[in-house]
Length: 66
Image (cartoon, rainbow, N blue to C red; front, side):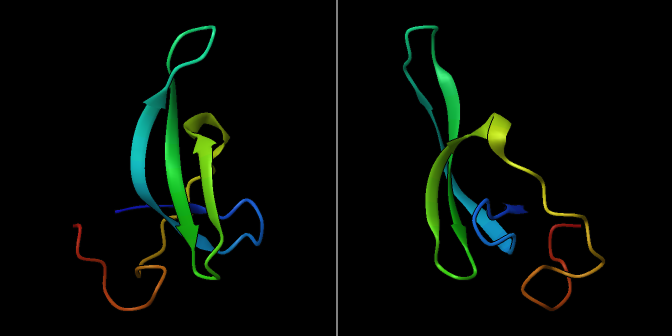
């Protein structure tokens, strides 16, 4: 799971999907993002900010990806 900062509320947000969308300058990588407060976005990945690496998962409990 990828965790980023929600661009609206600054809470943890999960990247639920990734896709490349066409543009006049060629394909641009986008991510579908959903935060803890249920905000949804489809954004270019270059606009995302990674969630700081905490010792614990952003939703609580131990991380499972290590």
